[in-house]
Length: 115
Length: 112
Image (cartoon, rainbow over all chains, first blue to last red; front, side, top):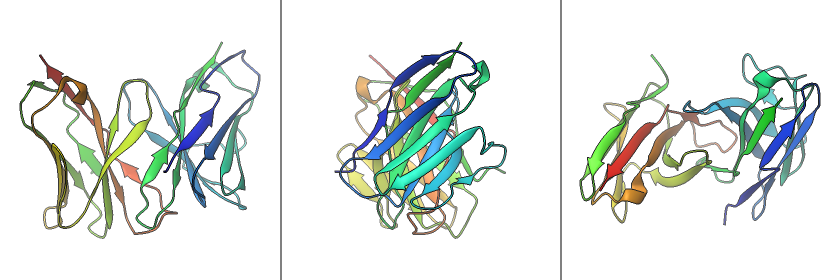
C-alpha cells in the first residue's frame, strides 16, 4: 500500500504557458498532500500543504497565484504552474500522508523544463 | 540553527563496511521521525520510521536519542546499491496534517 502517482513525469514547454501536474494517492485516502520542488543536488523545498476541500497553505516566498493548488478529492491534488518561465524549471514532487505519525509517501515527481 | 541538520557528506565507504549517519533536530517536542532514501533524479522513498525503542530492518538500524536530540541510521555490510542520499525527516507532532521538516540529506557512496 501507500502508492502515490504523479503525472506527467516530464514536461517541456514554452515560456508563458501553464502546466498542470496531477498527484493521486492510489490505494489510500489522503486528507493532506504536500508539494515540493527540488533543484539539482539541493534539498527538498516545501512549497505548499494541500488540504482536501480547503485552500492550500503556502510557504513563505511561494506565490499562490503563480502556483495554483487544487485538492478536489481525498485522492487527487493538482498543481498548476501558471505563465511558466525558465526559472520555474525544476523537479516538482508531491507527497501524501495517511497516518497519525505523518510519514509521507512521495509521487515519482515531474521534471519541468521551460524553454 | 536549522531545524533539522545533516552532514551532507559524501561518505565514501568500501563494500561491506558499516556506516552511520546522524541527524540533529532543534524542536525538543518533535514526536515522529523518519529516514528516507533518495536516488539521483528520483523521489524520496520511506526507508524506515524511527521509534523511541529503536528500529531494525535487516542491515538497517535507526535509533532516537531524545536527550541529545538526534536520530541515527546505521547501515551494516554496505552494498553498492546502498549508494544514495539519505534524508531524515521530523514531524513536530503525531499529526498527518503536519508537514515534515527534512534535513538536507547525507550522500553515501559505496565503492567496490
